[in-house]
Image 1 (cartoon, rainbow over the protein chains, first blue to last red):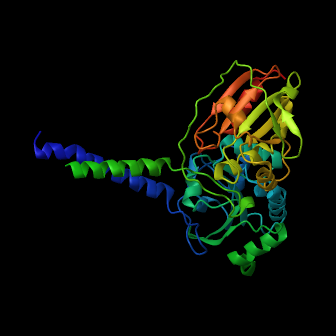
Image 2: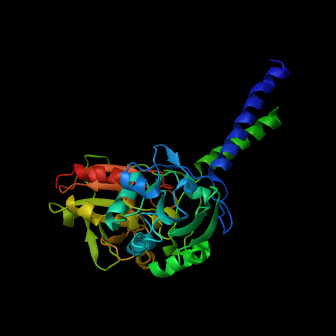
Length: 199
Length: 200
C-alpha cells in the first residue's frame, strides 16, 4: 500500500467524524435557552392528525410545520413533561388560560397555545392530555431533539413567540416556570408581546 | 500515521460520546438540588432471576412507616417493583412522578407499584416529598445495603441499583423483567403493555 492509498481511509474517517460533529451541532444546537429578541431555532413538528388541533393551529396539510407557520400572531409554547410534578400541578390552570383566550373573541385568533413534551413519547403525551383534559395541541419530543435545541431547559418552561405579518418572528418571552395564574400570565403575554397596545 | 490513528480514534470516541450523551429533562420541582453523575455504564449487574421464576420475597421499611413485604400481596394483587438507581439524580427524579398520574392504569390491572431504592428512609422522605403525594409505597433497601436488589441481580458494582422493572403476578411469579440503560427512563407504554397482559 503506498502512502497515498494509506491516507484514503484516514481522510474518509476524518470527514465522517467532521460530518457527525456538524450534524450533532446543527441538530441539537447549543444548551443555552433562547432569550427575548432571539428567533426560534428551526423546530420541525409533525402536523397533528387530529382535525381539531389542525384547525386550531390553522394547518392544512400533512407533514411537518414550524412554529411561525401557525396561523396566529402569538404562540405560547409550554415545554412540559408528563413526569414533571409542577407541569401536572399547573395543568388545570394552563387549561384555564386556554379557555380565557378561546372565550375572548378579540384574542382567540391572535393567541395559540401548544405544549411540547420533552422526552415524552406519543403515548406519554396522550396520557398527560387525557389525565388533565388538555384542550390544546401537545406534541411529543421523545428523542429530546427539540428540548436540546432550546437549551435543555427544566420544566415547565414557557416561550412566547410573536409572528409578524411578513412571516418573520421574535421570541418576546422565555422563562422557566413562574406561572402565577391564568389572568396574570395572559396579561404578561399581552404586555410583553406588544399586543396590548395594538388592541 | 500512528499519531493520526490515535487522533482519529480519539475523535471517533468523542463523536460517539456526543451522539450517545445522556438526555434528560428535569422538573423545576427539584430546583437545583439534583446531582448529575454524568453518563453511567448502561448496565452493570447480572440478573439472578428470570421470567417464570418465583419472585424472591422481601420485607423493607416504607417511607410512610412500617414495613412492606412482597408476600403480603400474594393472591391479592399483581406487583410492579420499580428499582431506581438513586435519590436526587436526574432520570430517577423524573420517573416516579409519571407513575404517580397513572394510578388508574395500575388499578384497572389490579396492580400495586412498589418503588425501591438503596437510599435510606430520611433521604427518600425528602426526595419523594418533591414529587407531590405519591399513591404507591416507596421502600428503602438501604440496610443490609441493597440486599433485595442483590437477590434480584440488579445491584451495581458501585452500590446503586439498575433502573429495573419487575412485573410479578398474583401468584408471585415474575412475568416481565425490564433492565434498561440506567441513563434512560423506560417508556411507559412498555410497562402498560405488560400490565395489560396480567390476569386481573
